[in-house]
Amino acid sequence: MQQLSTTVVAVVGSQAQPAVQDVAGANLRVIAATDDPVTTWAEVRRSRSPFTVITDDPLSEVAQAWSELFASQRSTGRLEVAVREARQRIRAGVLDLPDYYLTAGEAPFHLTVLAPQSAVRVVPLDADVARTVSGLSSGRWWPPPGELLADLDRRLPDRFAAANARDEPSLVALGAATHQT
Image (cartoon, rainbow, N blue to C red; front, side, top):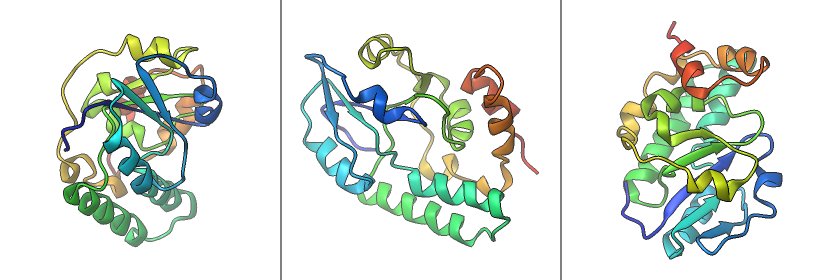
C-alpha cells in the first residue's frame, strides 16, 4: 500500500455519479471518472487535498469478473486473471485500494468481501458526500491484496443481491452472511 498525501474515498454503487456531481468543500477534491482505475490512480497520487473522492473503483475488473462468474456460470479463469492483474498493479504501485469505500445506491457485490475485512472502511453514503467523509472513523487497514482477494470463486454474491433488495442492511451484516461453498 502506498503512502499518499491524501485520504482516498471511492464512491461506488448505482448512484455514485449523481452522489459526487455537486460535491464541494475546501477539503475535498473530486477526480472525474475515467473508467480506467490506473489513470485515476495516477491523478490521485498527485492530489494534495486532505480528501480525494473518486468513482473509479480500483477493483472494478475483479468485481466484474466475479459477478460474471456467478451470473453466467463461466469458468474461474477470467476471475483469476483479474485478481492476478490487480495484485500485480498494486505491487507495482500503479493502483491501490482507497482508504474508504462509500456506497451510493446498490453497492457492488465485491464489497461483501471487503466489508468484513475492515468494517469502518466500507460505509453507506449519507445524503451528502462531504458530511459522510467528515464522519469517517479510522480503523484497521485492508489486509494484503493476496489475502483480501483470496478464494473469491468460492464466495457467493447472490446473498448480497438478495439482502440488498430488502431495506439495504449494513454491509458488515451482509459480509458476515457471505459464505464459502
